Structures are given as C-alpha cells and as structure tokens.
Amino acid sequence: MDNFLLIFITFTAGYLLKNIFAHNTSLILNQFILYISLPAMMLLQIPRLSFSFDVFIPIIIAWLVMAISAIIIFYLSKFFSFSREVTGALLLVGVLGNTSFIGIPITQAYYGDSSLAYVLMYDQLGSFIALSTYGTFISVYYSNGEDVNIKAIAKKILTFPTFIALIISVAFIGTTFNPIVTSVLESLAMTIVPLALVSVGLQLNFKLPKEELKPMLSALGVKIILAPLIAIGIVYIFSWEGFIANIAIMEASMGPMITAGAVASMAGLAPRLSSAIVGYGTIIAFLTTWIVYKILAM
Image 1 (cartoon, rainbow, N blue to C red):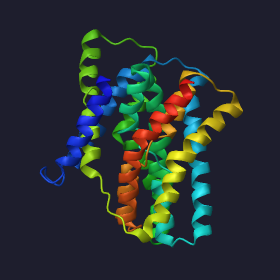
Image 2 (image 1 turned 90 degrees about the vertical axis):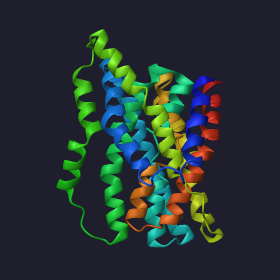
Image 3 (image 1 turned 90 degrees about the horizontal axis):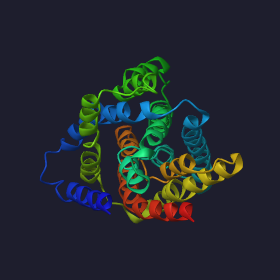
Image 4 (image 1 turned 60 degrees about the horizontal axis):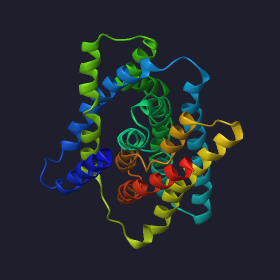
C-alpha cells in the first residue's frame, strides 16, 4: 500500500505542478534518472542474477510483443486509411511502452525488489534498444523519408549511460559488493520512483480533438489491451510459467512510452495526437496493469 500511495502522490504532484515548475524540469529529472538513478539500480540489481536462460525470457517477450504490435498497427492504419504522419506516430506510441519510468515503480509495487533485475533486462535490452533503432527508423522514414544512419544509431546505443551501466552490471553478475557500496547504490536507486513519476506527471497532455479519437483508440487498444494478451500468448506457447514470465507480461502491459511521444512530436508526426495518446494511456494503464496482475495471480 505504501508503494501505491507514493506512486499516486508523486504522479499527481508532477501533473498539478507542471505550470509552476520551470518548463525544462522534466528534462533535468530525466537526465538525473538516466545518468545516476537507473545505472545505480542496474549495478545494484543485475549482479544478483545468475546466468541462465531465464534471463533472456523478458528480452524475447519484449521483442516479440513489439514486433507483433507494430504489424497490427501497420495494418490497422491501412484499414482506417490513416495519414502517413498518424501512422508513424502510432507505430511509435502504440508499440513502445513506458517500461522504466512507469514500469519500474508499478512492477516493484506488485512484485517487490526481486522483480527489478528482470524489469531492467526487459527495459534496456528490449524497449531502449527498440527506441534507439526501430524508433529512429520510424521517425525518420515517416517524417521525411531520409536514409537512416546505422552508424549513428549504433554509436548512440553504445554510448548511452544506461546501456554502459547494463554492460558493467552484467560483468559483475555473481559478485557481492562491499556493504558501503551497496548502501550508496540503494540510496541512489531509491530516487528513481519519485523522480520518474514526478517527471511523467509534468509531461502529460490530454488535449485531443474528436477527429483524432479513432487513431488514439487504435493505439491504446494495441498498447494496453492487445500487448499483454500477446505476451500471455507467448508465455503459453513456450510454456514459460512463474515469476519471471509474469514480470515480462506486466512490462508488456505498461502504457505508451513518453520518450516515444517526444520523438514523434519532434519528428512532426501528429504531435498533439502523440501527446494525448501518452497522457491518456498512462492514466488508463494504472488500471489495466492492476487487472493484468489480478489475472496472473489467479
């Protein structure tokens, strides 16, 4: 209950204070999270894993869910004759999930700290790399049709702070850190939940004309309804049961990625629609993730 109260207070505070804080507050909070909080959490949690196939389950599910979701959205866009800009926007915000800023506090609230290492694998080797590669391709292709610079994408991934932290963390799997080091990492990692949720609240936008309702419902239907069902189907097909599979399903249930919405807006891909999908999707996902959790607990 304490975790959910913290989530509600910080998320609401961010939204209510968005007109009081400086316009770049969310950017500063995001940079702190990406450069300090998330790397600290990775160094704290991932070394506690053991090398086994189980580590790859969240990664496999992440990529399969995103791939299938992208295909569904592509053909929905054709069926409804959405414009090129709207199609590009939906392929970003309807496919990429908020598996870190929202995924970490929500999953931690339901499954405890032992879930965090698997959440990070899903997020960093799934969502983050997808944003950097697939997300870049979609934003460039649907905005102006220019060629994608593969070398620039690779450099971006390899030099990103959380990816570097992930590689270092994997190298320390099985290692027990000095209690002082562990204590420092715990203190830094604890900042991710309040800062991330305040940042999310600051960035929400709910404005949407009626004519954009159909593409919004299409994106949200795929992202917060079909995506967890796809994940459940994958788990069933491969007979992956238990704690780790449930973590991956919960991550697949998260609402649209805020960064994906920002990428869509910067690329000129239906900015107002993209922001609204992220805003409504984030709020709705608080309910739908609870429903998914209850289903998995049956």
